Image (cartoon, rainbow, N blue to C red; front, side):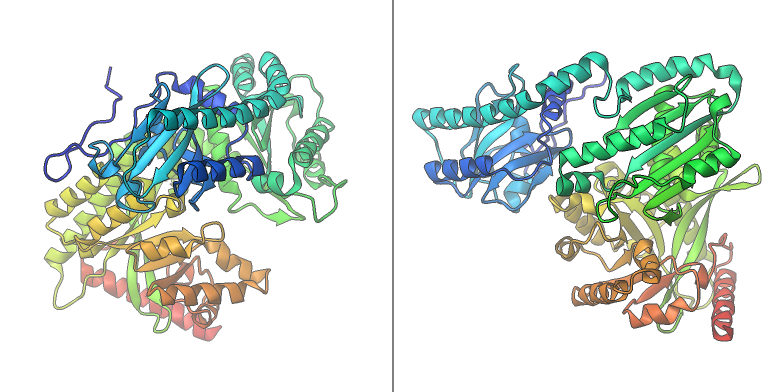
Length: 631
């Protein structure tokens, strides 16, 4: 069995460097207990805030936290002296404290071999002294700490430690009291595996029943799945309250029940915001039944101002190669993606998932072989300067044609992730792109300048040492300089609370000449502070921002303000998803520097000869410019 203990690395000078804490020996039980409290991501509560301020005064420290250690983060129920609401678990001192009986005390983290190069020590909030008293649930499992932090070395004597422990007991009592309020409902739910709000099976029970349900209907051929998802569920719960939120779910379940006979159906609440129904072939909705289902007034009893948006997806499928858990995971992924493209009317999006769902079920078993047989290929799409409309860059886009049909990049990425091949796919794209650049450099004629290729990568992947090492190895293999690549990084918003690992990774690769663009920067991910910390040259705004121009007159002012803010940071603004040439002048007026989309050319397979490729792209740009002038 592989050793799951994090490996110690050596920092400069040979000292052991920072390593994340190992999981608690009863980690799964501990997390279940923490989640059962329903305290994570809850609102500020005065009694917790008052308590941390009091403890900070008692011990004369600038920072006092009630820290709860989740699966991949530590979240602060109360945070006196610190603006952040959470940090990554890998950096958390409190994750180490989970292994202690009573306390973890670090008098000077700068001198401690476990923490001296931790990003929370070397950067904000500059932890020097740390003392955490372990918080436990009613069964004794550790949940987090009540911790003290100072920017200078400190020591606590025995009396002070006992006082800190008594303060921690006060926090424990608050948490356990909260737990008691929910205990009756939780007990009933655990006993019956039935959601008390909707009457539907909860996820674990639903998967158990689904396995038998699918086996019984294996000979029926096509089955149908229907999902209803509350959009922006967390915001709805915080703004309207838990009672309103649960009332909406209850109304949805009643409305769904009115459309079907119970016989043969399998109904589940597969997540906090999603209901799922499996229908046998003889109850599947088609024709007029489907139209009546779609067109019925949803949640009509609620006022327009309080009525939440819904995403409703349906698809027929034949499942003979997936487990129940895999099938539910695939269906949920396809539904999440449908929020990007499904048409919306009166606050409800309807998505036909049939084609995508069956493609996923079929392609999951084909993808690994296709990747290793090089059936995949790359296409390039031009990016142009907004003013001159000259070629400014080229984005590498993944393509796969199977049985005369093209599999979209998003579908491939989801298939790869499901198959555990996403890392292998990243390296495949990197090698293909570098091989093309190397060939172009070796065969180009004259003084043709070689524009960098833009590769897509997630922020979580970028910070991995294995990926950074592989990137440098591939560049050396093809004798390329870093300035021939630009990495379009998505998912940077997940590093808003703890940007240090991402900043360090980007700066390290920037020293090799590689440039960066933040990809899919949008309404939910609008931290200018984070952008100002990253060594980036450009930002691609989310296509949704562009599409909102058609329906929201305020969007133009918002976009203009954002491009101006980016220019203050000396960052180029890139508009993507430009489908019509008539949008070009609008984008220029709004302050965009670069444009990308089908209005300037479709993604094309690259030519072996770089000169021919440039000529082909420039001809395409001229044709599109001519079409724009004609229109």
